[in-house]
Length: 464
Ligand SMILES: [Zn+2]
Image (cartoon, rainbow, N blue to C red; front, side):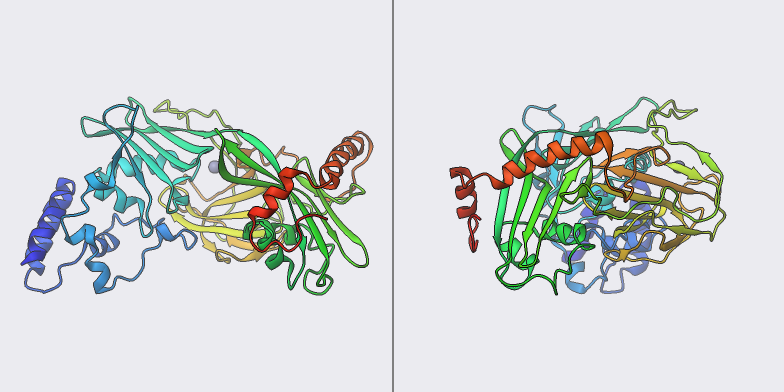
């Protein structure tokens, strides 16, 4: 009876409370041929993680379990054990291990496998409510665990070479976090080509990522109809900045300038102070609104990145602004954008994250109900949700965050995009920036540029 021994080893991997309840369950169900897997137990238990239902991240999906999945190797076989999944980290303390997130992982599954108590996971999630990094786990991300005497002292989530979040255990028992983003070296890359069928297809062949191609169509959508106005033979140039840390590409890229040579006219976009402008300094992007609602609601708590918890003394930044809004009041997107997350979180409650172009992101927490789904395009002022009191909340309110280039800023005072032409000093600064962009775009084909282009298979036109 293979499944009995397998399920026993699984049971011993759990905290005692679960061992007892599972053994009881096991006795009741032992006559039934299919023993419930860890998944089915956890998804039906009151401890199941409601927030792990993000449609966004495959790691957080909890798919319907098939028989095949019930026999997932880690649940029913002896290998791979948690030891084979954990790799000791050289140079760190002897109790430091790293784990690379795999497809199908959820945080609770990972903690089960590593025999870490659920309580610890909840303590991490509690600290994470201020950054919501753990909701963004994707295959390939690296987790680093520092254990001492079976207690997790430090936990690291590495998104990339240049971006990680470190959770450090404090004496009071909870965790404090620190988000680390390295500036790295940014190097130019010019990608150019010719349109064959579509801009997105041709620019990807020339070396842009899908995300970069989509971002460009988004930036220029007010100026050009990419399907109707552009034709075969139109030429494009895109100046990118790519990030490197210790000589390795991090995968973080920034679109700095775009020029499309159309039969009738040229189309331009230049990045200046987190916004895109045409060659005359006119803003290409739509304005933001300051408040995530229409009407008036009292501000009940301010943005405060150094806030201390009054009882535990732990640093608990308040990365947004709270508004006293009754349950059911309409929450509106502050700008045009794409819904990136709709997640239920134990502490943040139901929340929505919207990406606005390349530089801006907004978050709306403790919602009662969402009207949008992941991947949906939204307009400025569009009703996206009902305000609520979900998660850990002291009363009905909306917690609203604005992030610029990955960092939370005060949504009430931040310079938000306003759709006007640049004037005065700003215009002068823009013009000198534009000069440097044009110099880089017009630079005659150098060895570097040719080399870059020849790397990309299928590039139709290496230089212009
Ligand atoms: Zn708040």
